[in-house]
Length: 384
Image (cartoon, rainbow, N blue to C red; front, side, top):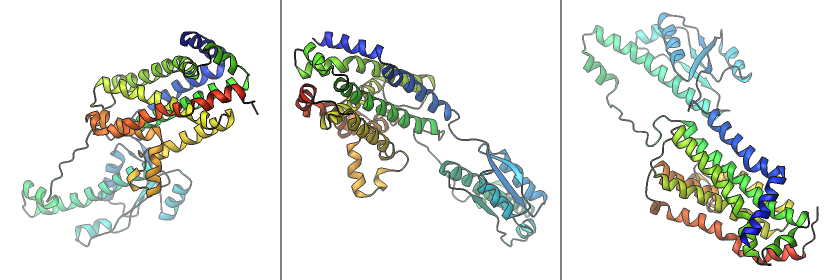
């Protein structure tokens, strides 16, 4: 019976263009789009302006060093701070470096001159990265003058290094030493959007049985056993989703070489739980509200909220207490935590057992509403 229902579902999948689009074309587009959008790992050559009222060899050297940084590119010199500020407002530059007149002479006379850098935080990534470059170049400028002064006084290089940097920093960026936004964001955005498609298709495939009046035929092929009907209906979809998910994992972890410390079997298990949990949630939404429009609306809302509640952009521990509790109701949150713990950092699954159990609970949610789904298929009348 499962075989007959599965053949029926395959026939539906091949005839309806929505399935082909949402199960193959759009997911592949999402994978290619996000992984190629951040291909360099970090944004580079971001436009920066300069207001150099000092115009000395020292100030010009600072500007040249700023332009040499990977993430900054000096695109314009402005005669005043007002002109540079207007350029930021017109989105021509993301930041500018202001060197007032007399900076070099004050620096050589140890009068502690003040330079300024202005950056836009409208775009958080560019603002944070350019602030780091501008701060670095300011530090390097003062260090260069201090080094020349101490050399003139007869200090050795070791003494100069100790004076300029009393504490030496030994920096370790665990698991993502390249600070790659691609490795950090694509591994959340792509699975999140994949879950969105799975949510919608799961609810849509049940809702269309009511819409097109084929629900009784579906149940008859399963001998009116709703459990068999659901397994037969979603088994072909599960295999297609798994092929896409495993293809994505192979692409990002073995072709693009995204960092991962977990075993290949951990990736296989996580991909399986991702698909099953998302399907379970989509079926559950339809079971709660046996309406094509309402169930798909709830699935869309939940998937979009998942991207904010997952904790990658803003940590969940920094959210309000009510939102922290709400985050447990999103499958993507648990997927992301298992990925972070067991794949990205390579800890055993035991360290993430609670999140893994939550994914298993989402997988089992349909069993709470199977009777309601069967009743809807037999008695409900579709209302547009």
